[in-house]
Length: 422
Image (cartoon, rainbow, N blue to C red; front, side):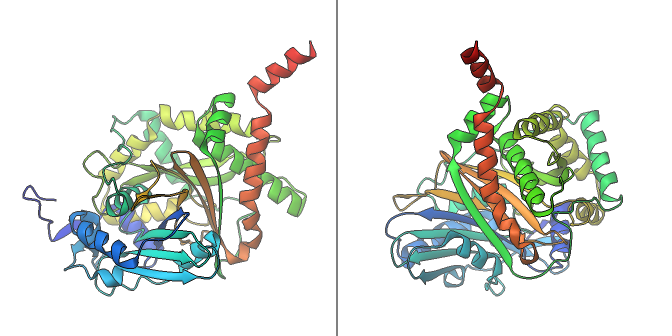
């Protein structure tokens, strides 16, 4: 935004934006942010009124990719009736079915900016609000800031953007190692290899965030460590039961936001990734969380986020886009394993969201992705999977079982057992 408050006619795309354009083959890659509510739904007119008032003041909601894939171009006046729609469904709202709908339904905004808002009402009560954007235009944290500013009764209630730090040599070495892996031979991942096709499936499960925090304290890790370790153990049990064999360590990419303070509403993807091997070969969830915690600590200590940010800033847009596509494709990784913190629950016209979930469609040969979305007291694990990987719908339930196992084990629990036996 200019000093006079106006928006420039164009904003340059970055390498990550180009990578997403290549992955989606110049189409849209939907990125829905879903908020589930109890109680009566607001009227469509009231949602449209709020969107019409706020959207013109949110920079990212006023641009769309130019066909030449080098800039975002400012669009004209907002046609709110094309951007805010409603759906009535019988009974209660089925979160998984709604999730599939948001990935399959085209963004019918003609020449407007690539986002929309959906109000889904169940005839038996409850409703869902969904802010949906194109992943070329916004990353997950960009969607956090946009959804809050567009829909919340307290639009300023948002997570703080990360402060930037100087890069480190070990972090730069780590990035170069990830690039080497991207250009190497395909990585064996038997549970996730195979042809892509069929309908995309979506599964959500929710859990009190306090459980993840408590397990993190028990095992000396973070909420994110517990999420990833439970995911590794879920893949182990899922694959072992199906095949009788242990799954090798699973390569995933962990997205990391590099939106600096003041860039919250800028169009484009302000993010980098790190390659992480989920220890699916670990014999127990306790061993899995120990290995995950050590790996994420190395990422933090090496300042991988800022090392990649600096390297990317010095890379030509077209070259960076192709490198990004090498890092995130189905030959070298199973998919993204994201973690997004929304902060306070969405408050819309006095109603408080029960849970929220942000996720995206699949592209570039990837057959699955996982996201943990947190709001103040609730976490939601979302698994998006290709239709040919139908049994991946079991992973959320296996993740819950792995979390329960982590709660039953660990250094603190083991010490208590030793005391009780003495």
